[in-house]
Length: 327
Image (cartoon, rainbow, N blue to C red; front, side, top):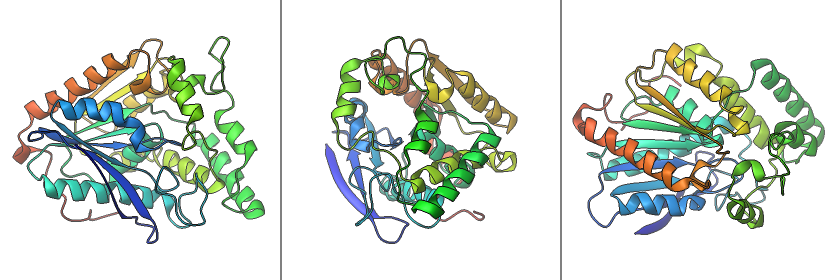
């Protein structure tokens, strides 16, 4: 049973569009999807439907500037003027509180893909209580100095051209080399998946592949830059089960290298239950890859392992009816 609804964004202006895929019977758990850059949550419909048929209640929302959560007079790829990284996390948290209050006894897991993985990694540092597990998919890490330079460039361009400007230069610097390891690419987006039909669907979709505004890039770079703060990372719940998944040919994860670095950073932060799987030959969008059924099964089996292992009353601390003590 698929249901669409909306709720107020933390920006104080925009209504956030959300979707829920509910099983026919009682759900075994809840999985919240945090989607990636220049896409929208309904792209996950086949995967979410697969999980719902197997007893998982799946939910997710369109980030500001994406899908059906675009504010009036704002372009796609624009979040909000003030505190956008925090607003994105608050919008994730609002949906979580809504779903968790409706099913307080259910194990609650989150899956973040690509930009959503950066949001989720920040989220885990802030909202510690009550999660049963986290799936971090298609993630990466950029050097601190490169991020600082990129942020400086975006700030200067924003002063000169305005935060809603879409810069071909910044977009090229961010994504220009992503197809360099693909022999004879048939499109600039071939790095997304080996399945050409999925790539063609992405290119043909007017709600996908748009260029970010300078505001969008500043928000994205800030989210990634914050993840270099080791003190922030040490605030994550140490016993939380975390699973990293990435394609070995995913440029966002530097072909596995950056994913391993992030995995190591979690271990260094004292995380006790972290695992990783890299899929041979797979590119960025694992759930839309040629071997996606294998990926879906892996995700489902990991989720159900978490459900079986943890009784809801014993999961990682208290329920999250309140805000964290520190921001």
